[in-house]
Amino acid sequence: MSSDRQTAPKTAREAAKAAFLARHGFGDARRESLGGDASTRSYERLHRGVESFIFMDQPPAVESSVCPPGASDAERIALGYNAAARLAAGSVAAFVATAAYLRGRGLSAPHVLAYDIETGLAVLEDLGDGLYATLIANGQNERLLYETAVDVQVALHAQTPPDILTANGEDGGEDGGVAWPLLTYDTLALKIATDTFLEWWPKFAGIPAFSDAAIADWDALWAPVWVRGEAGASVFTHRDYHAQNLVWLPERDGVARVGLLDFQDALRAHPAWDLTHLLQDARRDVSPDLEAAMLDRYLAARPEMDREAFVHDYRALAASNAARILGRVFARQSLLGRPQYEAFMPRTWRYLERNLEDPAMAGLKAWFDAHVPAEARR
Image (cartoon, rainbow, N blue to C red; front, side):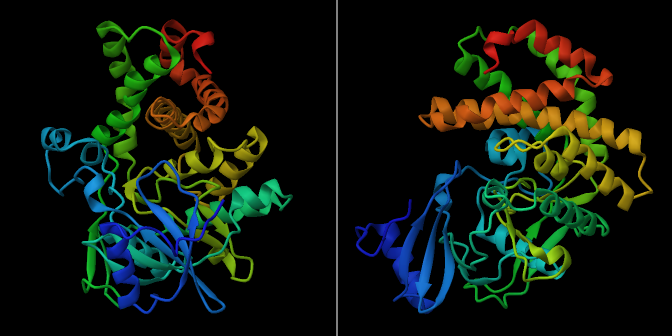
């Protein structure tokens, strides 16, 4: 539910936000708070006459350090989870540079009207409320939306992305041009993310912590998945590509009909990665038939790919992602006082179990059967 923010107390952060808005011609805009997510960002809708805009607030000091290019594994681990997993820590620079790259490919990332990297503030084009998840729940043609989302993936994967994403400063920033490295979703990042299941699931499910022997087996079984994930890392990857981050823009043409949100954590990754988020969406059911049809659509558009190898990697990376979501996102958030995430757990377990039915993943299926009994999967 939204609420008016005009009378918000003048904290230091609020004063900085008000000053930023005034500098960029939005000082008299009516501010409407929008619902947040599990991140440290918050959003408001700005109303100025008949126009509306999105105001993004990402306080820089609340996140751990990002990964410096060239940092060793040990250095990344010492810096914290964001650096190890190669997350952007909500960086406005990452958002601005990535948005420019996507728009340069003819895709519908929001225009950035104003930004301040040091303060962590930006005013964005408002792409509206036509989220895929909402429209589909209200009866919109699901297949058309998913076909177009897959076509966006095909378009992105047709080009090798640059090592550095840049924006030339034309979007009204206070910092001139912006550059952001497009790092690789490498073995360490995949491992660190998947391993959060080991830390958080026993605490949530009330089962004993996993033994050293179980953890050693886990590492050995997942290692080939992570290595293949890094070896196949060749395309621009949104990293959180699902129905709550996609906006339907039917007045636009072709792949531009898909509005893109929340892409600042983008990396160079395996081409299956975004498809695992889209087609095994933790927040809504995607039928096995629709999943299969969309994988067929993607592979038909990329006939140069080895279908069998791709589908194997897709299942393996999807299983890794499901373990990450169950641990880092859902169990952790529930234990931190956000029990609403528990509603998504059964669906995510179904996706994980379905992926583990791949004969190539028999060892991991046996690990889960041995260490996470059915009653601890909820």
